Image 1 (cartoon, one colour):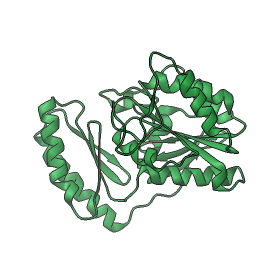
Image 2: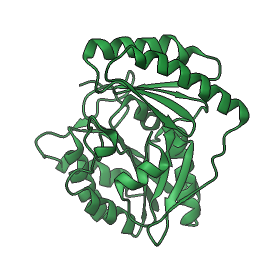
Image 3: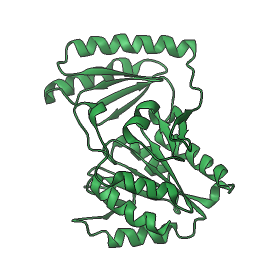
Image 4: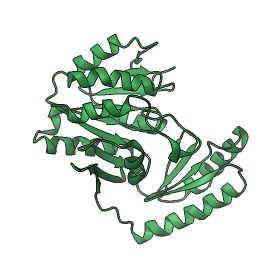
Length: 281
């Protein structure tokens, strides 16, 4: 386990001993008038699966999310690379939850009736043309990589290699990075067993900034009054973790370099820490 270059080593949570981490979290967030709890989904709240549509939140996650959403001074948000509709369906977030899908290219919220309300996300003609080229590029790669498949998102095409043999996954990933990812106006994101090729330059850092502004507006507060808790497991989450300020709190799930202040071992560790934190919010 390692921390990001130049960043302090995160406080490690082992074997459920989270008292020190919870104390750090409560102390860090105490001065804030409002707290945005923004969470990645896959690998943070839900274990990975070979079939991405078969994942389910880990035990206890639903109760914790509901507690955060109902908090007197907290707003719940989910930030994912998934399509917004898929995120809402799989996570089943409570009313009032803010959502950012496709790494922030899509945004919405869950209304009081539990329905997903989205903002318009129409593509330009140039984006449509580029997506068509990326689809063709990835189809050629998938044809030579047993187990690989393509996911179509609103503003991206994604190569999935989780079902591939390790050598095939490596070859397919390299082909995508060296080929279509190098096209002009393509914004690649390489994550765990995925290569996402986006046609809009959005990151989870952008998504968190937008969600902070929305939480502040909903609470009728200045943005500076809203602290952020962000938890994520993948390299794609590090843009958000690195963007956090001294009054915010980053939580890293699992191994890997990180800018987070706290590291938990798995999804259950996230739920346990958030359970204690929700009681303080």
